[in-house]
Length: 391
Image 1: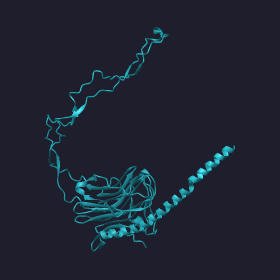
Image 2: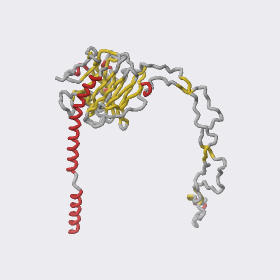
Image 3: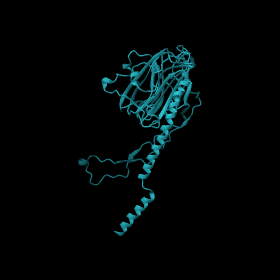
Image 4: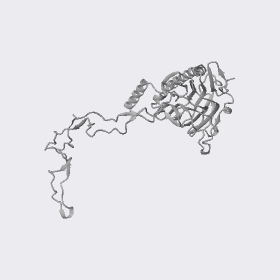
């Protein structure tokens, strides 16, 4: 039987702990709580157990799937509270898009213990949000940290790897006590860096001096009008002119037709609007910037990585197109435990890729068979020409 129990911090191993794990076997719906936040609006979607169309072992590879389109999906599971102080935090899970989500997320939220899991949703405070998100051409892998009550996005987006509908991808986040982060997708590093540098968690160390003023004689324009350049006397700026060749018609009656006026035509002498020539400014000294001073509001924090309480993990998603399957979720401080889950993904991924190639090859053959070869088209055209000639 497939292992499916939630692993709590009491299940310690020699080198670390598994705080939570889920493989969505029998009884998964008793371990997870569906949010009721959107029930009154009629926009709440349902998670159902599914392995998708490609799998190695249906029971082993069954996860939970977003089963409807254009719905909100809210589902969470609680576990014994813990802090990641002084140790690595590893969050890992699988996501498989059975079809193009078009607009929506496939991320997880991990946060402090909730009083009522049925209210889980967008207003729920969380510590970390991690995973793929896309809408149209905007695609990225989200990693948001909550710091002192504020959700802070990474300064630069991380690559989006949730491509290839029908195949699973594995997401791993590692948060370290030295305030660094590593993100892997499909066991390949896509980011590694500093929380302090790549997220605006802390105030800036330096700020512009508010008392520093630009000198009145400071020239910060690199170009200037040439004082020696003058508009030529014969420069014509009028785009239209009276047609001097036009004559009043002989039958024109000023009393009945009004006073005759010659029509306007494009001016053949028109040269365009004149503008003075630009030259380098000899007084230019560069763009002025106020001098930097120490920011009195800056306070260093050597523990931005640390969260006092982790007590739930959940999916809080909107998806235009459903069909996303999540599986093999684990929160641990032991890389060996995470690697064991990753082996499951690797075995499944090989099967999925092979079946996808098989399907793609079959579609290509069917498309090829449905398209007549150029030679046949040419022969058919020749026969049509012969028939026309006989007629």
